[in-house]
Length: 418
Image (cartoon, rainbow, N blue to C red; front, side):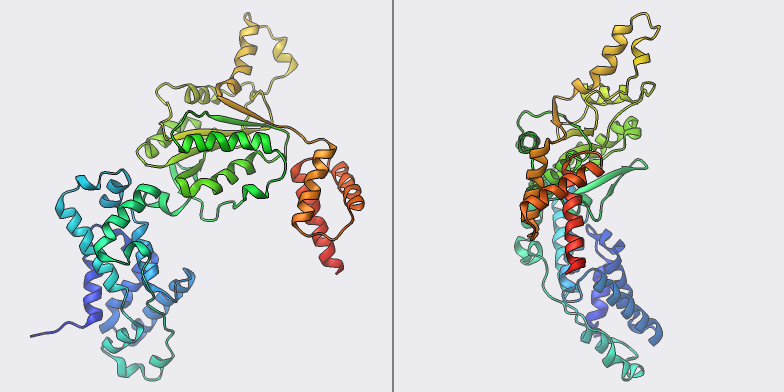
C-alpha cells in the first residue's frame, strides 16, 4: 500500500476545491499551492516558492496565522453558496452543493494546519538544502477565523455572515468607485469619524436620521447636501458610511459624467442584500450640459429608476445645481420662464436638501476651540482666537476646513519649536 505524505495530500485538496475554488486565484493561496507543488522540484525552485509564499504572508500581516489568511480568503469569496446565503436562499440549494461546501470547509481547515517543518520533512531533496533548511523563515499556522472554527456549525455561521454582510467584495470593503462600467473597491477609504466633525449638528443630524431610516426600511429620501466650500458636506457622507457600514451600509462614488451608466450600476447591486448610497460629489451643471436630464430621470423614476436598496447622496456648493448667467434670463427663448424653472427644478427633485452654510465668527471660533481642546494645544484662548481669525482672513473666509487647517498648522509649529 502506498501512503501519501501530508503535504502532497494538502496540494491535492487545494486543487480539488469546488465551491470555493476561486480562492486559488488569490495571491496567498496561489503561492501556497505553488509551494506545496514544489515538493519534488529542484532546490532552487523549492526555496524560491518558499520565499515568495512567506513574503506574501508578511504583506498580508499573516505570518503568525496561516489559518486566518486562508479562511479569510474563503470568507470573502463570491460563489454559489455565498450568493444564495446573502439572499437568504441557501436552504434552496441542492444537497449536493451543501455537501461540497462542507467538504471545502474541511479541506481549507486541514490545509491551513500544515507546518513549515512538515513541508521540509516531506521535501524530496531535503538533504541537498543543508544548513539552508534551518535558515528558511517560518510561519505559524495559528487559528482560523470564527466562522470556520467549528466544522459542524461552519455552514450556518457562514450563511449568517453573508446575510448580514453580503458576499465577495461587498463583504470585504465598504467604499467603491464606479469606473469603466464596473464597481471597484476602495482599498484605503477615508476614515473620517463622525464624532471628529465639529459644528453643524442639526444638518448633520438630518443626514444621520435619513440614513438610519434607510437602513431600517422606513421612509427616506435622496439627499442633497449644499452650501459653502469647506463646510464638511463630503466629510459628513463619508463619516456616515464609517458609522453604519457594520449595519450593512455601502457607498459607491459615481462621477457626474457617468450618470448615463446609472442603469448599469443599479442592475449590479439590485439583488445584493445590503444598502447602498450612490455618492455624487461636487455636483453642478453648466447651462448647456444635458446630463442633468439623466439625473432628473434617476431621481424621479422611469426606466432607470433606482432599486429599493439604493439612495442617492449628492454634494454641491450651489443650491441651484445648474449654473445660470444673467444672459440666460434675458435670452430670446419664447417661453423664458419655463426655461428658468427647468434650470432651477433639479435640486427640488431631491426629497431632502440640507444646507451647510458658512459659519459666522462665533461658530467658527467654537470649532477652533473644540479642535484645539481635542488636540491638547497648549495656547491661551485669546491668542488662539486672534490667530484663527487672521488665518481665516488670509484664506478668504471662515469654514470648518479652514479651522482644521489652522489647528494642523499650529500643531506643526508647536512641534517644530519644542
